[in-house]
Image (cartoon, rainbow, N blue to C red; front, side, top):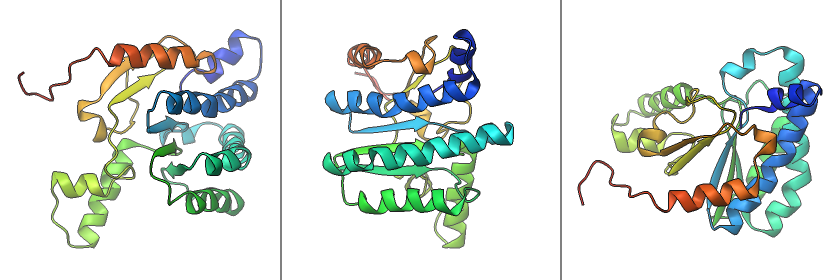
Length: 215
């Protein structure tokens, strides 16, 4: 979800305002996905590298995360949507960790729709964390086992969309993205809309995915 800061600059606003607009767009876009029967969506809110930004910015974004979870939890429950935060949240204040834990617990039984927020997430961290789990439990290091113990489990993205104009994954789901379709848009995240979701899905349906095989 790239482009919050540049969108704010474009409108003569503060970076905090840009992050507020970007945060408010997440659940609307997720509902657009649900309406199109996309059952799992992961929103890359903060990368491991983003945590090196000024402390006031990272703290502000963590508060936005906390507020957003509290705001949308009743709707998650009503619509039976499973919620999860993937990434290293160990540094977060205890009250925010409790908010995340509560939301994950009370939605854990739902299976049809899944909303993931990647916060302080990195694909390299995810792979190393999975390998460490395998070694600690004396399990065979194989493709299947490594995939199983990633933060996403067996959910691998069919499609990855990056807004904001840059054409790189920036450490997002490096293992999981091996055969994902990639789309890079110049649109800044706060301007990304349900119409964009619909257009992307319509174009995705035209792609013949062969996974290295022949017809």
